[in-house]
Amino acid sequence: MTSRAFTPLASLPSAALPVLDVGCGINKYPGAIGLDRNPNTAADVIADLDRFPFPFEDSSFREVRAIHVIEHVADVIRTMEEFWRLLAPGGRAFIVTPHYTDFSSFCDPTHRWHLNSYSLRYFGEDNAGYGYYSAARFREISTRVKLLALWRYLGFEFLVNTFPRFRRFWEFYLCYVIRGKVIEWTLEARKPPLP
Image: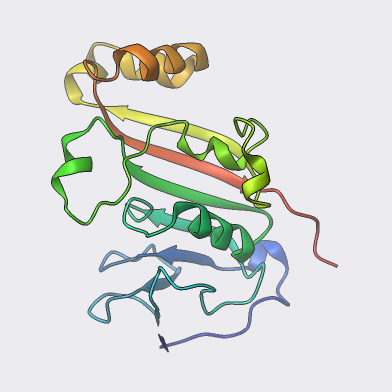
């Protein structure tokens, strides 16, 4: 693990905390602290994303971004717990991954996980009864599914993203025909306020 530029952040007010771009690659989010395992990227901190904890203090970030990262990690639950640890109370996680019905989910041999739009409910109040496996809790701010262009133009993307019951129906019965492309989650860390 190598650090290029890091200052302890826990003493900053929540709104002044920085953004962490996990798996930033060469396209680091502007103004963010980049974390990646590859030194040939725009990362500020080099660390193995499958080894915990990441080299930051608890509650050090107002936002954690993981764009096309969660499908690559060894342990989704442990990674989400680490995001939760790093976020200040009320901080947000922005996570993007291919929908499991998209060709890109399976054509990359480094993808370990193939997720749908309900995969992260495990960390919310509706955790399907399995919430006892993790103390990390997130409130779903939004879940947005992008569909392939034909279905978007025909209005299915609007229906999937506007009506929760239609999204559930689509995931259960239609998604193998009307295929998804990408899922975007915005989640809020549910944790007690800092002292």
